[in-house]
Image (cartoon, rainbow, N blue to C red; front, side, top):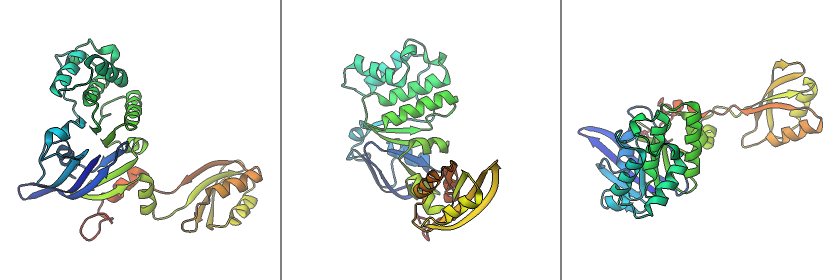
Length: 319
């Protein structure tokens, strides 16, 4: 649905984007990350047609954003970080204005009604936009991006400034939209990206440095593969059971978390998933597992590792 090939953008002698290539498929939510100044906003502006590339190609549903801009833009719904609202209009007036601006051919009344219901702004349709809360204005901005039912949604910081309840609602809506649209989501709230996105693309210094699922990135960048488990039962017997599991390389017995509950760090052999066997052995002896977590990196840790410069190849690309 979105195909980016060897994208470059120069501002005079400065190269802001350097030979970036990635794809986003239909029904996929792609998290697009990068530190300030990495070239993220430049890339998103090129994807939406607001900027032209110095070289390279962007295809939106097969249409070249440079050679066939009208055809490509028909497939794009865009929510910038600051929603493009007209504060003196009512919500209904604004959405009808966007409908006309996009030359939408869908049945006006039912189409706008569906969008308002989906965005949960039905109850403010007659209100002037300037009088709406930040959360409602953000939803109106999201609603305008859905006018015309575009195949691609590009959302830049869609939950910035919202309260926790509003953030949860917008996340839920994005996940719902991802079932029928291709979504590119840019956000500095990394737990949000991890909760919503199917795959993650990271750029730094204008270059693509990662393009994979959070799970795969965590596995490839983690220095170890330890499991941390808390098990209720006599530590000597629990340790003996753990040691008998095929695939266990080392066991480190830690602190007593509470009465008769001990924490263990278990290092499995490479490419061995021992979680199910641990569960089976402990269940057989009625030793409850109170916690089991991997020592692999969180998305925040992945992002920091990738953008410190330690994981570049010789040419600065993905390693």
